[in-house]
Length: 59
Image 1 (cartoon, one colour):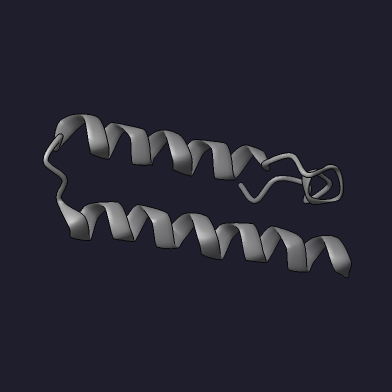
Image 2 (cartoon, helix red, strand yellow; image 1 turned 120 degrees about the vertical axis):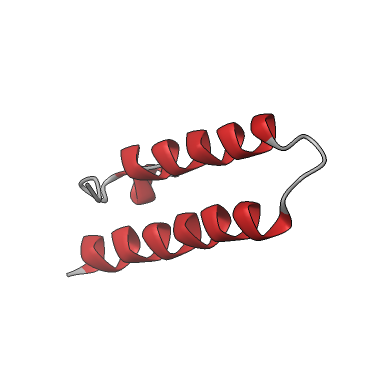
């Protein structure tokens, strides 16, 4: 579920990045004071996923 990577060229987010950002929103909503480890894990997945989509788009 990496998306097609074309979003990078237009500056849009990929579908999978949107899903991960939604998961981040859910984590923040459940733990308003913030469980830092949970937030960091979701954020790290978003960064890795964005890089993977960018890399696949270049191939």
